[in-house]
Image (cartoon, rainbow, N blue to C red; front, side, top):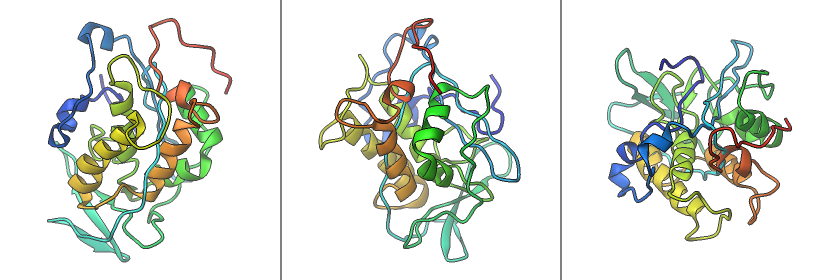
Length: 241
């Protein structure tokens, strides 16, 4: 399977990416994993459009702003720490979103998903436009959305989503302390916020986007069903977006 711009398979191997965080989620039967799909992606600004991550589940989450620290081998551009990540080709600089206001350096994404995008992407673009557009800004990409040509391990929001959808028997709605949401925000913080940018907390755009996706204590008024709930193949509800 190849990866195109803004397309990411959200089952990118949670426990591999999260081993440093003592990953405790389970993907279950690997044969069943192939039947699970869910996705979220970013749509670029005037420079072009983005795609979505396709996986047949729904996901959402939130993030919080982090302190301004620098990473080894990082550079500073316009007052913001950037960290080089990625494998294979030349690494991309990822904006660490460590400015006081937490806003990205890049051009924000539009909230106009394509017809071919997943229901998760459409739901998030519709309900969480502000945080979605900041998370998936480009030129440079940032630690919330990550480099679209990478494997998702430099993206707070995709790591959060992957953690949620890989929970055995499915994630439970709710954002209170000790919830699945809280645990997966912790995983994203430790493995990406800290691991990529040496931040003490998750970025603001990621925190806000994750919270919006998660919805309320029953998973409503967000995109929990569209992004974080796992369905058997062929049993996904009709998309209303």
